[in-house]
Length: 327
Image (cartoon, rainbow, N blue to C red):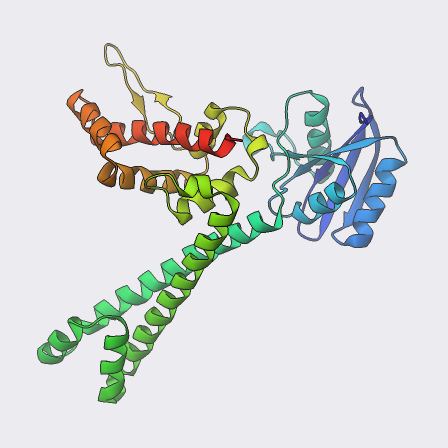
């Protein structure tokens, strides 16, 4: 059934603000609702009292996630509306932001579907947990290396050759008070390594179930596959291969001047997805014969290493998009 009322929603942690517009852009009403089941039911009653609604929600991957799930579950048309850039807003308040979201729906420009789904959310949480654990382990390892330097030369030489559980056992066996901080740091690093291994096992199992085609690509492991699935959320959110490249920050940016014709790296887009593609591109250059030969030809044609890797990432983005969209 075609919708007759556009509902724009500006989302926050504890409260959302909704504004309803008719097809001519006239404001029909506004509502402030709590982020709970009662508030969602109130929004549905408010919207349905005005006509057949469709919803444009800001932040369906964060504050608006629970609302988007509730509305989709009730059978309504729901779209994601990106927050406007600060420099494009002359004034800021929640009603205006909600109204702008509704106007985006009325404009007729295609809006992406919301980023919802329990398995996608689990992948997102696993990736965030992995980044946090990896950073914490790196910090613990660096602190431990710095502390070992202060020990007597003989003891430092013995401990510097040990890693992981061997280092923990060696420190625990000495039972010296001055080594207690080193023992705790070593235990922390070991515990974080086990946590990372557990996260990687979960990522491998989940990505193998959700999209084995991506996982089968050379150089693309569970980490890259998970990030692609999280960043794209759903294939129907992407209108074209170029939109995927722009999302990943690998679309070429013109940087020509005079007789020099060149493109530079794109610093926009989803940086986590860009990092995942970068690591996969490096893996393919190192281990995939066809990609390695293509990379060498780019270097022979006068491209710098950074430019050659950028081109490989763009080609890889094209391949991953086609794999993702394959029936």
